[in-house]
Amino acid sequence: MPLSRSFDASAAPLPLPTDRVGAAVEALARADALLVTAGAGIGVDSGLPDFRGTDGFWRAYPALRHERFEFHEIASPQAFRARPQPAWGFYGHRLGLYRATVPHAGFAILRRWIDAMPNGGFVLTSNVDGQFQKAGFDPARIVEIHGSIHRMQCLRSCTDDTWDAASFVPDVDAAACRLIGEPPRCPRCGGLARPNILMFGDAGWIGARYDAQARALEDWLARAGRVAVVEVGAGTAIPTVRLISERVGADVIRINAREAHARRADVISLKGGALATLVELERAWHGG
Image (cartoon, rainbow, N blue to C red; front, top):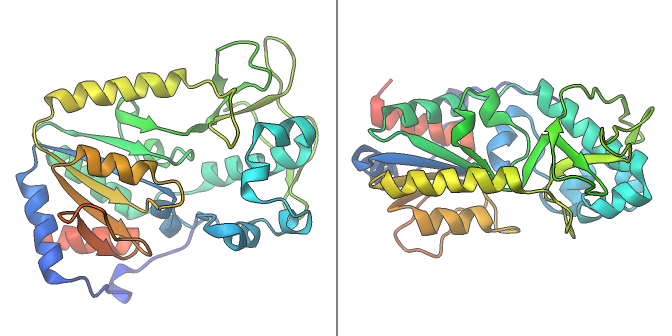
């Protein structure tokens, strides 16, 4: 699986409607603050899989196709209880992948836009990969609604503590999607550890870190003024990010390669990939 791929935006121009590009630039120019919301689609141009549908998931992890593991089955606490080696094989491989991935240039464009806003900006993402932090966004202004693969918790929830996963360097047989060696352990009880990620059927997720992030976002929104939302790569299968975008933003710019439609008639929908669309908007706004 490639960890990154080059992307020449000039070689793949998008036929974006000029009226929508103009409307997006006007929305950004009149905003006091910017909320960036993002789903898995933002990482595709960095070489990350988006697990779109069962077939997309199995293309990324063919060993799990062989065992008929669907995404919602392997991404569950029950998988860690019943089959810890493939569960940690899957998450260990993803942890290594995210550590090795370089965020594409679209992240830097979004950072510049936030820096240009009178009242700054915030990020809200359903991604667990830590790419916004890696791209230099302020960690205190990032909300990870599904948690982070870079933190761990006890599978038994013996404590409400979570801890940094930096010391865990997974050795994974990628062909078999199996962790080689011992999985990580809870430092308190010695039981199996798991990622601090909200999974399917997950009553044991320790969400205190997310709760604090969400409070910080609400505090910021109360004093941010007119907020523009740039939503990138958030799909409809789990529509949380899209719903938040439409609830919060005075102006919403939706960038999506497949699902750019919106419930709100005034959403500015731009159908295209994350990087190429952000490059086009940057050119329209600031030239170059």
